[in-house]
Image (cartoon, rainbow, N blue to C red; front, side, top):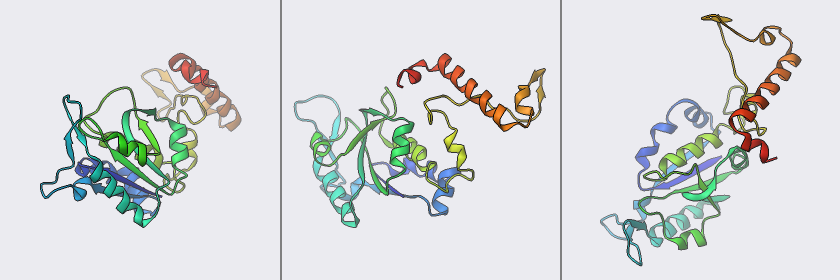
Length: 226
């Protein structure tokens, strides 16, 4: 799978992809992450990619020409399955979206900056608009990193234990149950006895019950989605 990111600040994205699971995913050839500096397609020698917005108001807008030229050139290598604009007014990203995107072959993420991008780029090129929450960041780079991590870990072969992703929170519209490790007794707090029985069926039942209980307490809105 290839995920490409178009941004004016690619340096913000180098560290998240050079460590841990995302690093291994790339080393193993399961995931190819490409960062593109939008200023490569700037309209002048000064590297300009933004301008004042029509109608007045504070904040600059990323212009049509740099984005259109960048997308057109990148698509000469092959069509993107999805062109995603990361924006606060997009659909809130969830685990189902991550699952769906993990099945794609080539995705482009456009990171907004300043007051965003010219609406005409959204109208012509963008196939999805995604938000990671009801708040505003300085730019789309951190949100793009979140999306890449959430999607990348689902690609077969990325995780050492591929069943791990299947038991994550939200995969079955439930939060994950509590987990325990050694020691069995810590400051007079005991590991639930069922986890020490060695009976997988009993453990599965307990985990399902705990997941449902935790979801009811903490995120009842998830259950209402069903």
